Image (cartoon, rainbow, N blue to C red; front, side, top):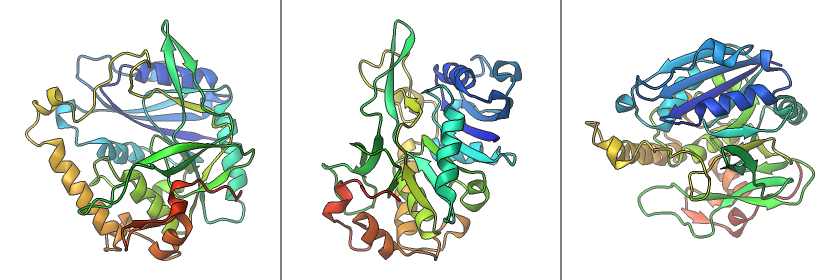
Amino acid sequence: MSIFLSIASYCDPVLAFTLRRALATAARPEQLHFGIVDQSPAEWPRTEAADVAPARLTFVRIDPRDARGPCWARAIGMSLYDGEDWFFQIDSHMDFEPGWDETLAHQARLLQVGRRGAVVSAYPNPFVFENGEPVHRPVTNKVLAHVVNGTTSFAPDHPVLSFAAHPVDSEQALPGFHLGAGCLFAPGAIVQLFPYDPFLYFHGEEQAYALRLFTHGWDIFHMPGLPVYHLYNQAGAGGPPRPMHWDQAHEATRSVSWWLYEQRSRQRVTLLVSGAPLGIYGLGNVRSVADYAAFSGIDYAARTLAPQAFRPVTVAG
């Protein structure tokens, strides 16, 4: 039950905490392999193999001035995979419940039966720091299903939408039409079949990956009792300040603005949803974009959102 954890970290002071907690709460820490892309200054402490023992570590350090955004870093992180049974892409500011590794693998294994492939994903419940200690603040202990944010609509010049997690009172995993890039658990085969697109920036990455999976015949699921928590970058979270790649102070150190990456990324998402040939980063032919519209209510061709796009799927898969 080996698990590869892909972590793209950007100047994140919570990274070391995340690693400690993943190890301390894992049922089989010796089966973990951390692939870390640490985009932080050279003077920051470097993660060493001893820091994650008895797990394995593959570590890449990149100066923040050379960083090109979250998707680029996630693509590098995915490339560090080394044949593990499971692939788990997470953010660098997470907490975990005891036995999270066995819980996720058990749920994912059940969902693979009779399918080309299945991914377990969601925007996890939040946690905060109180007096330096993690405190879980779950919205629900059932399912967090993704829906289109009720305040969003298609812009005239790009297809990027906003999504939110909606609690559903279900004891069974529910099919989803969207995923969370910071919490994505799947069979290791996903790395070879669907490598992360380094030409995307950030906004729209989840839509692009969800559509790629769907059209290749893979299914997304939101599981009950997701054993992972996320430190959201908002007031009251209690953690140390966490900068973003696009912060003005960081922008001042670079020759290329994040906004240029963002504009290029929006153009690429536009090409993807139109079915443009993007090679390994493109759509499949098992299911169509029209099939996705019928399932999700998100019609990329017509740039319309049906009522079901704002509601979770409530029929167990």
